[in-house]
Length: 375
Image (cartoon, rainbow, N blue to C red; front, side):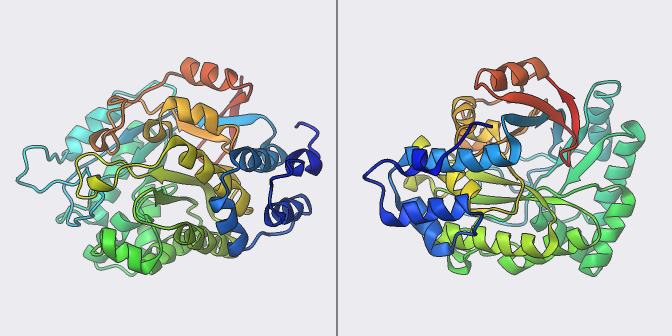
């Protein structure tokens, strides 16, 4: 870790007194407030944000930057919900819809037999006919083929429906999925927690309280999870900080979140396209503020297929310490929303070289951040 001095961060005479006080809180290990968080978002001093976020990042992780070897399975894009921002969801009758059979999914899994893969990430649409037993069988059959793979599966929105459809109470449904072999939960479906904004963009899906309750219940039975935010649409800075604050409060209670992943709204092929997309500067600001505010979530991830390789590389100086994984698959959630890389994949060598080019130290991790190999 570099020898940081608070004066190096606040020496710019144009920095407001409020920002200087926030920096002092951070250096004194004091938690910043929601008002502080909004002020951070409103500053245009991107250098200050980068310096403060990087100080925290290097205090926590030094130059270490994590990745894993994973592949994705998207069982279906058929979904009962109709979110305004979604470019992925299709009706059963749509020519662009798909629903893999269990046989299809097992064939995908078999293609990774003998390969150096540690995680399968399973997310998709909320199919009207599939409950937790269907997905539980999927997990157990995958593990027969890949017995050592970590199954990270199903957003809280998917879980709420599949558990309810099977007639289970929440905790019992999660326990049943854990018995089938579920190892952890991704962070998707959080979108934005503010109830009024949520009504505008995804009114019919699992509510804010349901998302938080599902993750709290998962943590209580030993299923760790991640957390996300969907930013860059109709939300305000105050809405973003409210979202981060609710995550921080739950993490105080459970310590069950491994990483936070900001997800950028992408405009193509959805009903919110007219609002456009935020700039790269706004992306970097969002990473920095997230790292500064979320003092109790250990890792901050830039999901490179969503944000792009160039922005991901820059983000390593804005608080990010994890860039996800090899993504050796045909994940479509963001390709259908307009990202440039339509077939996202990077080899281990690509990732290692990518991280080293940013003067960081690459570490391969497992799904819960145990180090497998240093490069």
